[in-house]
Amino acid sequence: MNKKIRSGVLFLLLSVFLPKAMNAAVLTIRFYGGGTYLQGGDLNSGMKGWADYYKALYRTYGYPQQSGSFAPVHLGFEAGGDIIFHLTTRLGIGLGGEYLKATKTSTLAFQSTSSNFTMTFIGEPSAIPAKLSLFYFLPLGKRVTVSLHAGAGYYSAKARLIARTNFDYIIDSSAKGIGYHGGLGLEWKLFSKFYFLIEGAARYAVLSGFEGKVTMVGLGGWNGKLYYWGATASFLDKFNYIDLLIGAPGGTGFLFVREAKIDFSGFSLRAGFVIKL
Figure 1 (tube, rainbow, N blue to C red):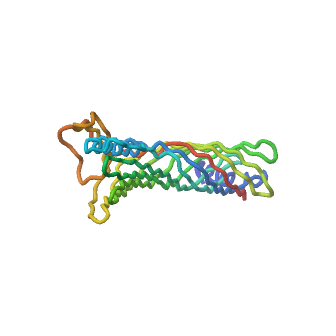
Figure 2 (cartoon, rainbow, N blue to C red):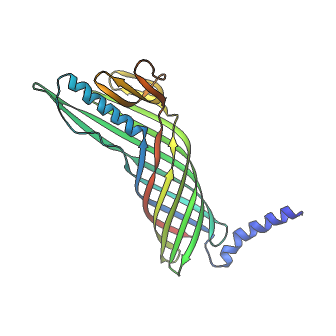
Figure 3 (cartoon, one colour):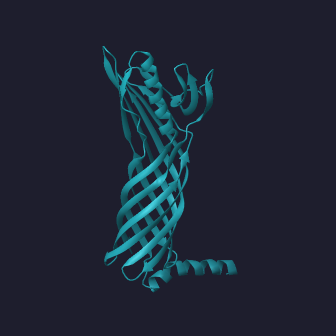
């Protein structure tokens, strides 16, 4: 057995038996849930462009009385967990996953001397990251432990956008990509191997390449890619817009065109339970 093989076997034995010999956990399982905040990116600025465009358009159609405003998508919820394999009493490698989702509905009301109507805009981003993390545990006495972690995740994300007037215009799109995360938590021992967890976490994940379909309820639809662009119009100096199209838009008045980027970056506050085996 050469030196490299002996070193590898020794490391494996220490990883498995050292934590147990020192009365520490070999395996930790975490479950948590809580609230999350995400940036939104082009989803928010593009849907605001929808609202700005139609407010300006219907003002020219004789609907001067308008109420309501666009509200960006930021707040949502998440739930997830990790299985942590301890390398030493303080270090561990975690495999985990989460589900996070945010949604926001905005309603605009338009009124003229003879009629009135409303427009509703709904943004709904969601993602499932599969995560690999490095954990560090720092005991503070017999009952409290500080936990820190950082790592990367592979995101399967969706972006749903709805514009609702006398029919629903629905965009369903999806993309995959890499994101990064980190967090700081406190674990309180409740009894035996059972702990209560409270944690703050942050993530960076900006994804592009969203593809999917548009459904115009009762009118058909099409498949395409999610684009984001800036443009000018005779009744509005400039607006940004997001839509799912068969091909990239172009022509007079376009200031820029690119694939839409949905920004899942943000932070979370979580609570949950930890089992140390």
